[in-house]
Length: 265
Image (cartoon, one colour):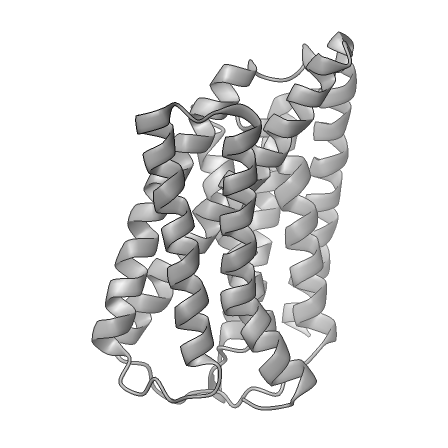
């Protein structure tokens, strides 16, 4: 009951923060401090919801819905903290609705995953690194969408909306900063997986590993293209979104098929 209450309250705070941020984006009005206050409250409440769903009397639930909730919590926290020093406030309109959807999924739906009674420190570290890596690269994908939106506004001379966004060059620079940090964590996540995961014959693990490695290659090529060939704009956004789609397919696609469609934990 407490998980449902905190989840609903967090969703309402996220919704209010999203509405205020949209008003700021479209009309250049609204008070940013209220957005961040509501966001902070939402993240605290979301933290209770996600932790109760992940760790309970039955063990640790690594199913798709608790992990989605933890991921969106991490994304929201990273963006909120970053917004204190960086112009990333507009990402709220992407990440907060995502958080709402994962909270509702966690509350309403139950996956067919059998909780694990004990997790070693190595596996726990691998999970933490994976969550941070996926969160950062999801933020980079949201930044790529925002960059594409800003570029489209510029091409169609819709300067009223564009002037409420950070300069396109600034957004692009931030996107690559996030990608670089995310790539470091993704590399550490993959490495820790090879070290601490003993049985790669588990259902879906081989597919997850192969697709995740493909995503890592995509982001490495993107980083190389940026610094060696000067990739920017549309081509950078496309590669970012392509790598993100591979990450989603690699982890959540596999878990969705196994737990929801096939009913295997």
